[in-house]
Length: 317
Image (cartoon, helix red, strand yellow):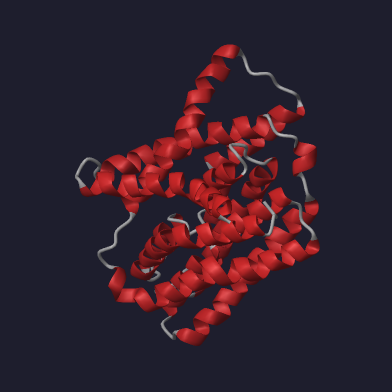
């Protein structure tokens, strides 16, 4: 029992200690908003795509392309989206809050929190299936977010126009390019020149630690009290209810352990920071969106530890 708890803590602690360190660095005045946004941009546009490219290049794509996993992941994401929509309508009549509530309930930080956590759980290896899920889940999150935020925006917006802009942003997303270029390189068995490989290695290794520090720097606990009730409801839905329901079904269906890990982390990841940015851009309740990010990030350290411990006790991972 103690070994399982230690395993869970060892998987979680490095991720959230780096997030807390980023928060502490900002609080001490060593990292201002302008600086960490610039660093975040560099990591997002260069280091992260290189990391994903290298991981896909070295992956077994035949094993990774699990159609059942992809379909299950997409179907359950849509179910979580519509479930959150119904839930939001039942608890609030404020249209701007509904958009922020729904987006915060289904859109997880799978890439920047989820992938490093999966790597830790799997003993330093990132399953190729996690990269395949990334290629599908990032566009899905963006498109569904546009739909709900446009419908419940405080201003009249064109869903078609906003969706077109979102699709264009997805096409230009460096993470998607990193994955698909990696797929192409993998299929032709590309061997990188030594100079390129030795350049890519440290660039990809710096991606996760710096991104986690930047996530910590974005956290702001000062306004948490103002929307605490709704933020707590979203946190319960996002971190407990969705993983409990959909992962139980996945286990019953007999998914292999690496797929279970990927699905669990995808469901239980804290709300993506991008949800706050999109809520602000589309005139949703940006304060609620911000507080959802903060609270789910804080509570996920606890829920992840418990969830991984349970999966470990059940001998699923």
